[in-house]
Image 1 (cartoon, rainbow over the protein chains, first blue to last red):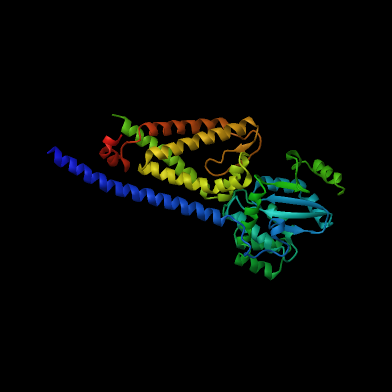
Image 2: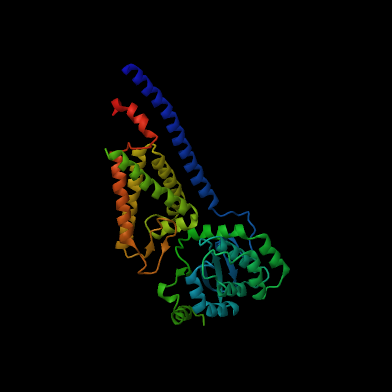
Length: 231
Length: 156
């Protein structure tokens, strides 16, 4: 009797070990494949389409006035409320400097807030080739949806925003429709990761991070630029 | 005996939290990387790698705990992870950083006054306690490990 019981137990043990080992093996496999895929897909990829003023050397950012002396780098996400606040306070001033050619601005549109950030950044990149990026940049913040990823920013909606921003070129419309620069946004994101950008907006002037209190203080920002001879 | 049931609950709580935390982080890998960088503990390259690998390690440990396989190892991993988080959050707090722990996705720098360090630390300490219980009593209800360990009794 007890012998029989023992036997049963042993059989149960072996069966169970198999299930258990298969389970452990499968889970290890999933973890390794998942982590491996994640590492590979979050790297910059030099083969994707990029807008005309973008290069790997500039962290895949969109560059305006590439020959100006004072260099500004701006990391932002079109869905980020703080970026909209920053744009509302300082955007007009920065745009004036950029239009006057006084600063070299590199825009790094990040997309960590979600899918609609990717669509917006890709659409903004489409307006680079027609020279309407600054207008599109402003228009996107003006139309920023109150809620993130709420379904408001579709390609159809972004085409309308581009048109109202003054970019009526059919190439831009086709570019937005085809998602031409969607994969480029991953490069911007991956590059920002290597630059230790941990919040948006993040602004560097000549490689130095802007004082945290100057983002929403236009007078202080102007003083920072004045110190570098930009007025 | 209540212990096998407590073990089951502890497994489901710790495993469930790990699985959920891993899943939510994996939804936005670049945010997970940002969250790790914001602790300012690791060199940027290593922090970025950790941000990508951690969600999958959490998912793996979470599944192991939920189905009840290699509970003791998974509890050592889960408990160590929680203590690591407690240490990381504490140092951020002590250094006056303003960050979201990024425990369930999100993360990165937040406005001063929007941190929740104490809640985050207490939660992770609670989960550490669950992990310690599982280390001491890994065999409970509805676990794949159970039958094997019964057969293994003379090995222990």
